[in-house]
Amino acid sequence: MDCKDIIKIISRDVLSDAEKILLEEHVEKCLSCSKKYLYLNNALSLLKDDIVMPPADFTQKVMSRAEPQDGTSVEQPFVPEFMTAQWFRRFVPVAVVPVILIAGIGLLWRLKTTKPMADAPKEIVITFKVAVPWAQTVSLAGDFNSWDIESTKLERQDGFWQTTISIPQGRYQYVFIIDGKTWLPDPFAKSYVNSGYGTKNSVVDTTRL
Image 1: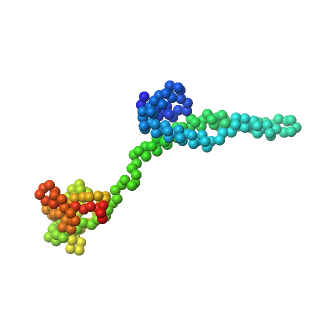
Image 2 (image 1 turned 45 degrees about the vertical axis):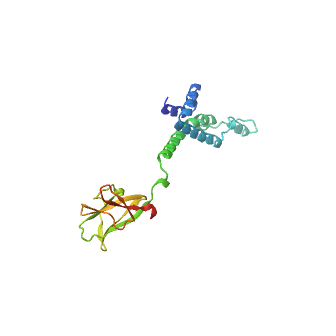
Image 3 (image 1 turned 60 degrees about the vertical axis):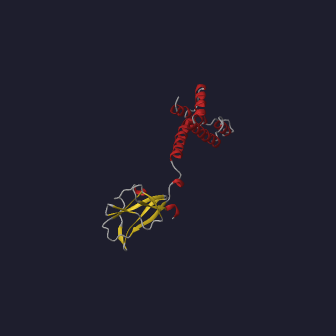
């Protein structure tokens, strides 16, 4: 019996002895179903604590006190079935359990698939610039843009080629691409590493900015 069959059993109001045995054996081995089962049991126990049921003879007692003193009978008012305590006891578990099951599975799925906001890397705004007045075009390539020499273009501003971008916090290698062919390390970089091709790559560590 797989997890889908167990979910169907959990959603039932009344279980047979055989189903109880199968359920207990499965939740002992399956951590996921065990958590769902525990969550639903807790939710149902809270509902049971909050629901106060009227006694079965509540209507009869009220009407008996309303009987006139002269002995004449009073016509019993019509009470729809859905307002009786018997109907409430029979219907509420059937209606509530599927709703709790769906809500519980949805909540567990969200908790499983949603990453905490604290895990998201912080974005850092940083300006890259280089003084190459003879260049016709300058672009920026590095770990942060998959070394795409076309995606991040620099513009001439105040005697420099420069651009400002936002990147996740981290440590990155990068270079400037001059006129689409010359790879130039950043003269303003604080550190460098070997590129593996006989040249140097600039390094920027945004965790220290």
